[in-house]
Length: 277
Ligand SMILES: NC(=O)c1ccc[n+]([C@@H]2O[C@H](COP(=O)([O-])OP(=O)(O)OC[C@H]3O[C@@H](n4cnc5c(N)ncnc54)[C@H](OP(=O)(O)O)[C@@H]3O)[C@@H](O)[C@H]2O)c1
Image 1 (cartoon, rainbow, N blue to C red):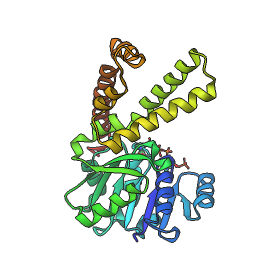
Image 2 (image 1 turned 90 degrees about the horizontal axis):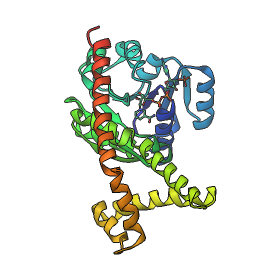
Image 3 (image 1 turned 180 degrees about the vertical axis):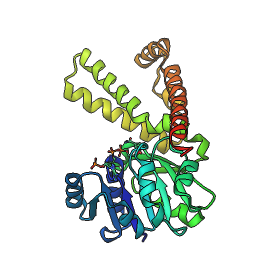
Image 4 (image 1 turned 135 degrees about the vertical axis):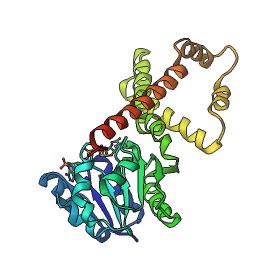
């Protein structure tokens, strides 16, 4: 069981802590967290029964084997500056900060040590997250297993080359927002056709959940599953014709392409701001 410090336990950091405690990756005595404000520190300490401080990043990091960097990307350089003197090569840095490359973290810490970069998504809050992880050359197989177990506590985890993190951000990092739009639109369609708000919502959310589960459990391509719902001359094909006319698939592909490029430009901006300091 590793000692874990979560620096910046906001939405994402707190969700990770919840998952870690629930699955037993670490127990309460092995986790500490930091936030910015005393109110949030009190709230989290009461919720999880762990030590949470407002500030105090160096103290929290000093004792930990895994240091989770869960602050916003713009705050990360400041936090790394605070903890850099306490860092040891035996520790692991795990950054959740979107668009911040491992090379920038290495530069700002000035240390040769294991660094993981992860892109989780918000369903980690309900232990159904999708997380992609990249690692630098100092990370061992055992350390990868430790990081994997943290994210497995809150969903599914895959390892990717770091250059693919922009695409991951665009697909699964931002993806819940696209799916919420789909659910919202399905609900609106049901409302338009006379279903109650409650019935429409229940049916829409379960349809998305069930369809995703079927993709996972059958491991069939979605096109095959879609074809199984279609009967010749039936209702489904008439709706699919509408979706094709409006370019649903093309729209989503373009959205992911655009978001990937936007993520790349955020990294360039962060490097321009902090990379030369
Ligand atoms: N949310 C997502 O869907 C998502 C997805 C993938 C990756 N991420 C990444 O996860 C990270 C956190 O995102 P989030 O949505 O969880 O943000 P968030 O809810 O705003 O959490 C940030 C936390 O950092 C704390 N903080 C600010 N300055 C600090 C400091 N100097 N020392 C210690 N703690 C400090 C804040 O404390 P207070 O609460 O007291 O202000 C807050 O709790 C970001 O880097 C983001 O890119 C998020």
